Image (cartoon, rainbow, N blue to C red; front, side):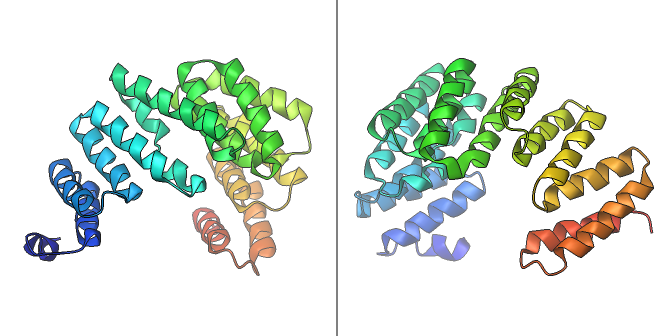
Length: 274
């Protein structure tokens, strides 16, 4: 960063100032992040991605209306809608108590939803907004629409739904929602895995273990489910089942090309006594 700062007054490219802004954002130095983003925008005002960085700087400084204005400019320039979830940060709406920012954010999501009604990313964002607002019936309708539009994203949509129920402390609603979805399709392991996560957050360890085990039994091998089963067995003092899960994981994932599979298998076996 120091090397970049020395070059700050030299005739440089837009990329230099964008990188400076990114480095400052990582360090939570929002004032300098804003300054460098402003310089980058002066050099290339047509680049939408700079506005999303400046929005983060404004947000960090409490300039909420400026943050919404920059997010709107970025949205108007973006070409790849699949990337939008990485910078339209729904979590910030939960954290922020500024009503102007919240309303501006909701308005931007509504606009994106109207202009891209079949885009699964915007459907997911709109669904998340309904949960944050507390309108779970509307959120359920958005979920059902999104699943029809993009059935291949069903598990991702379920995960997003439950994440926002958790973030807004609606644990009982989350259990009910997943229970109803499991009743509709008892062959889908994702529903059991997601409900197990809710049980964990509520410290219902026996129920979480039961759901993780069901997911492992009815679905294809899942290293994360097996890891959870083994850890919960350890917590319960059931070393026999925990060891059996370790052995099964070693057999199932020995030839996997997924590094996460080996990571979870290694941790599971390392934590198991013997």
